[in-house]
Length: 249
Image (cartoon, rainbow, N blue to C red; front, side):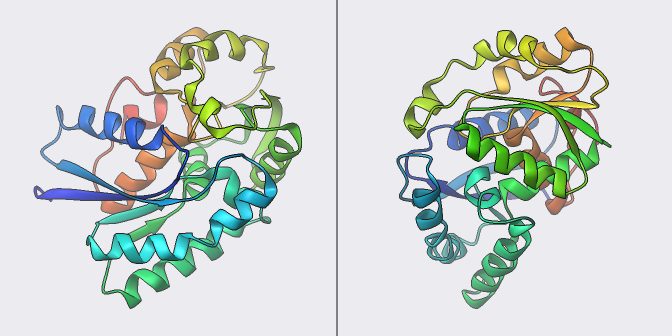
């Protein structure tokens, strides 16, 4: 597949990270592989990370899928993990089914995924049974994320919530602070550390350094999103510098 591959994302209107981190990783991959990528977004209104706004935003995802279908993207993904994980256990499967139906109704054969499903996919790819994670959410939302992940068969040993309700502020948080934050986590006997369980909280500048610091695999939801995209497209993943999940195919 040497043609330009179109990457589609359904992005919260206040998200400023997924349209930078996903392209950064895939452009880095271009130095090692022949495929080239372009990036296309449809946006859903959301300002504050509250259950009410997340639920309202989810209703807009079908419109976004139809818009991305018009662009004939090769893969489309939601770009908000907690919006899905807060709506019920295993909910990403229903969302993916609904999005695929809309894509097909609009003449698109795009692969369809969610960032919530991508985190589960990535952790399983890494063989993770026990993890610890960092998240920007208010504690009740982080609890829902933990419950969701554990329902998928992955135990969460420890978590830390930064309790930032404003989504723009989440995106402005310096990712290098995560190198200090991760030192507060209990990582004894965990298989993987999730440096950011939120696609809005920047992480990729710190991923490899955190992994080197801890001596155990480190990933984030945005890294997992890229890996899931590449797996669905049947493309090799190997892109060093972004933790264990993208280090090898």
